Image (cartoon, rainbow, N blue to C red; front, side, top):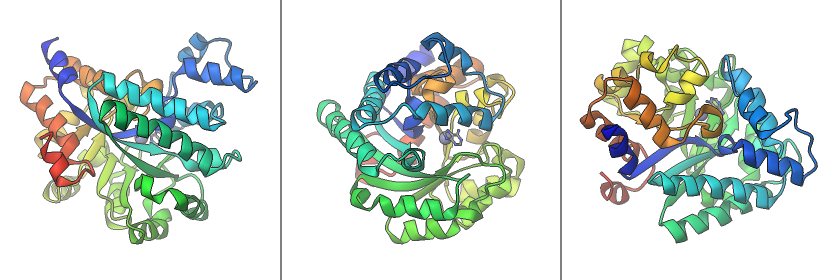
Length: 326
Ligand code: ADE
Ligand code: ZN
């Protein structure tokens, strides 16, 4: 497919990727052996086979279990380095990566263990590939506000490495207002803000993320199509949506790729971007997400180009750096 080739070859930015969601089954298997952990799977193929989800929660259960094999600094280095090599292969020249510190600190793994591993891999990618890499510290919304505050303060020695805070995990029942205070504190510390909203949750959660958390971007946001006033607001204020097509199909947020509303959102004038979310669990990295929409939707070359340019526009890169890619 000519358009798939076209998208593969252009320099791209990725804005919605969970590093724990880039843990490939083969690496999970190898780390389980290294640390003498018994996985509830018989083989690498059995892990791959288990990746059939009915909703967000059924995925999150496996995703948190998978992350348990990440134990020492070298594991986190390898995880990050593997993802950054994939970026290099796929012409992703800038990436803003979410990580979930509470998933690790809750298991007794200190902030320094994962941050030092990430730091080495990121320095290497900057040096060897000339990539730019930002980190987004994401709070787990199924945990308490106090736990989020703890994560924010434990990160203090690493603030220079962190560009923004985010909000992820089980959306329904954990609305943005639960994290209003911790987002206000993050803002006063100088962090940018993003939040998952309108993936499974209603448009009111997107309004909440905007009005109470003062976010720069909405992660997913596909349910904004249910609220015309919200669409108008997102358009007027150029609030980007980081849409993840393969994720939405795998988690049954949409019935099929053919029914995905990404082009409808784009043609309504929203700043829509394409992203992978959890590539190892959902069947592909950024290029596979482009391929999926190109092969299943009636998309033009101009629209593909627009989505790719939007990735840079919606990024936290300084304007001069954005201009280089737009
Ligand atoms: N954590 C990792 N992937 C996620 C997603 N798609 N939604 C919410 N939390 C997540
Ligand atoms: Zn996500």
